[in-house]
Image (cartoon, rainbow, N blue to C red; front, side, top):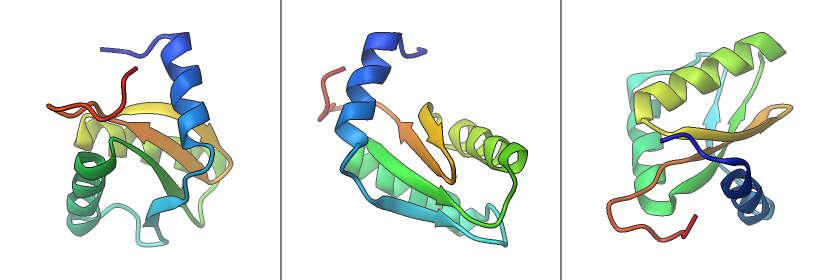
Length: 95
């Protein structure tokens, strides 16, 4: 289910102080990176992902690919940082 503007605003505020948990390097998206992304979303629900060494269009494509692979929602993209959210079976964050 897509997030509405109030939910996005709340998640952006919650993510403001977070540090990137996942770092996508020059090698791009790998199977191990996707496993680590899944673990991070399962643990935290809301995470920041740092995407290095790519232009704006490539970062957007990588963020979309990460969201599709992990069934997460994109909350915000600022520069090289993407904020992703995936609701857990037992939610920790009330949106």
